[in-house]
Image (cartoon, rainbow, N blue to C red):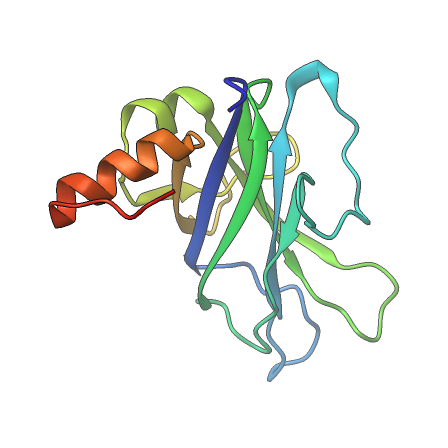
Length: 168
């Protein structure tokens, strides 16, 4: 297998204390999350890339009228070693208005998922200038990286677990 490819398994659990961007006393934000792979200077972000195999973008569904949404969804990226971070952007879905409202962003650097393995991260959401949101908004995520396995490794694992290995 190619040594420069690996799989990223990204889980988006929840967000808390999101800013209410909707007008009216009874209206609340309808949040969703956009997940982007950050390739440093080697990329152009695509808003239309819907996360097909090998692409750099996925998106959760939105929760209507919820400032503390729970998504519990996962996404898989086929990636290359040039990925330097995963960025999470939280947005308010607006049906009536033309543009969705930005609720905050957080970034997880590559060294975090390489060193912390299987840890759930609770990240502060930052505004567009990189400052902490006054509402103390947060997002809970997990990122796991897997290197591709060769057919030889799969056969060895089957033998180790079951004491035998099937014929090729």
